[in-house]
Length: 474
Image (cartoon, helix red, strand yellow):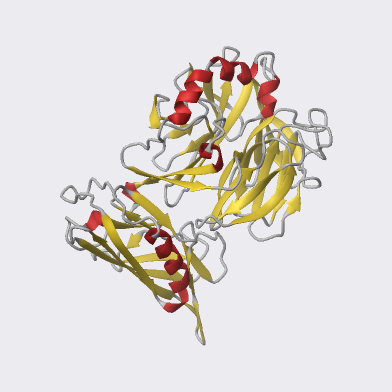
């Protein structure tokens, strides 16, 4: 929930939090408001969250546990249904996490050790959890990338395409740094320096540029930009009190999302660094992650002592949903999430969701002779492409799939049914629809499955949709 290294400054963010306590308390009572064109969903967990959120294979990595407690925090991999698998445990004050999907390694920062918390077994460093998607839970002690106490104010962590790990150290007073770690050594070097309370890190898709956020001595936020080689490209935004610096993530539309603004707002900065509201109503937004395929934004929040602390707040872009091909005044009643339709041939209308095993559309992230489609069902979507379709009270919902996929689809259908009747927009996600490739005498061939949906309203309107899921071999 907080990066304790930041609290160890002479005034620290703790003093600012106290000064703005009224604003925080008011925000805690506010409803979460998504930006226009998004559907808000909340996945409630059994424990308060702790800053770490990262898109994982078939789910989301989340830091959980009581705040600033020796060996009491952990990271779990949460499936869409809410089922959680323990990945690593024994942390003290989780600052952030980043998942290297190509190598199946989860990196976690922890900014407290036995010096602050007697009995702590490790801390003040960055950890690497190998085989994070499948391995049994591991103790943090023994997984250190750098020795304990080597990064006293460890904050954010990010990983580039080559597997290099970037870690910010929020030392304050101009002593803040970003370290670059070659995990093959491992060896560490200073990538950038001269920051105050260094915090959020994000790597820009395409360019590989490193964006570094900091809270200055006046607690205004500033974001600087560096080339992959560490060349300082100047200030991207700030200093300003119009956005926060806790965590950064690039949206699929190219904007940079920043958390940490007191009052709970998450801010999106355009290419020029100009900020605009993204989401509001959170108590104090901490970790943020973006699914590069579906575009869903996942945010953690804290400091309220309510369900806000125990939830993964999810924002689904309607522009990435897939409507059917029926009557336009009904198509918004249901739209598919997590698929991208591909034309069967040039000039032909798209009809199939085609994915190659191991590609970004494959939610398990590996080439393993099956595709895991991150399918979901969104109801009453406020779709600007369907202006003559009005939301209605959804009274019935049915989802069916071919035999091998029926169980996971039926389980999600039951969760939808438990929420009916439904008046507003809402999304429900499967734990992933598996479609294996076919093994034949001639070699591996595409696998195919079908999912059919019917959503009906109290007024008698009905929306019937279908999608074929096609998995091509790697």
